[in-house]
Image 1: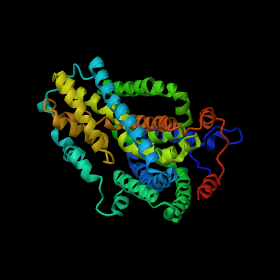
Image 2: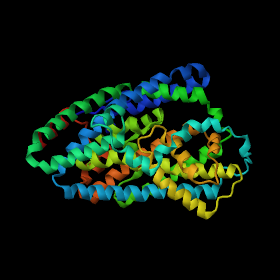
Image 3: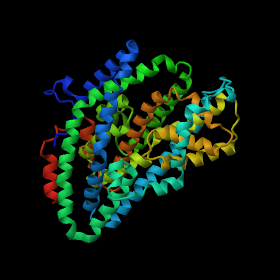
Length: 445
């Protein structure tokens, strides 16, 4: 199937202006110019961005369900499923924790909040009350209860990704347990996934419109000048994310035989889409399709990518420890090593509990600070105005982290086609045939 997300490679017979990455780049540029010179008009473009994200979220639940069910069924045994799941969650736990540690170290070294001398009494606590009130959802108890839907269908109607994951894994495992009796159901899911990915292909054609609206709103409402006073925090966060992606994930990629820069180039259209919409979810279906085309086994992709979107949030984790220490430094609050370790431990739990929560980065920060009494939650008001500018970086880092995780777990499982991966990253793959997914579905059926 031709999944039109900018093409997997740059082919000479396809004009550059037809590639999604070029269209989204132009849209982001135009959106920024409109928001800067005509801020009121830029703010009015918000429905375009919100509408596109709603379109994508509309199909994420069925795409995840169908992909996981067919992926798990394709594994054929619970032993194989357990092997992939154990390796994936081991990877998620290690690198998510490492991201928290990196954020903590950089904040201590650079100290972006030092010298601001903010009086805690001068802060407007009401500005963050809405986020703090949602922080209870990020506790481990809230996470365990929230993962179970009220009904089998409510997870899909509510759009709760964690609950969809829970149902899909249960359904997929049940298909394995009943054996051949599940064949008609699995075949139906295979064919339904063909339709869903074709729908994704159609929706991606309006991605530039969504990116234009979202970016015009961001610049129009907050203005580039709004980050001037907090430029140190924003700059430190972007620098830390770059260190993590290029340094940490780059070393992981090198150890697994591929280049992190080539991977970023392969996913450039999706990364620009995430930048424009400030949401990694907007590129989730595209990431799954591209990872499969790059040689990762479909069952592994179907399990690792959706779970990674909930449990492998490298960018969000960097943000939490970095922002927490920035708030403390700006108010001249000295955080002891013991409190920093407590902060790290709480963030490890709250970052998992916030999976699927709207505005997860800011909400998990509120949940984390509420457990560390030395830093007032009201201090979040300091970064509320620039959080949107850091949201894009969080989303892009999360996105790249999950792409790397998919390749690594596929390699660990011995289900990575190294030749296809090399061709994909070098831009040598031919355009996907329209019937490619259909042929694969029929072969498995």
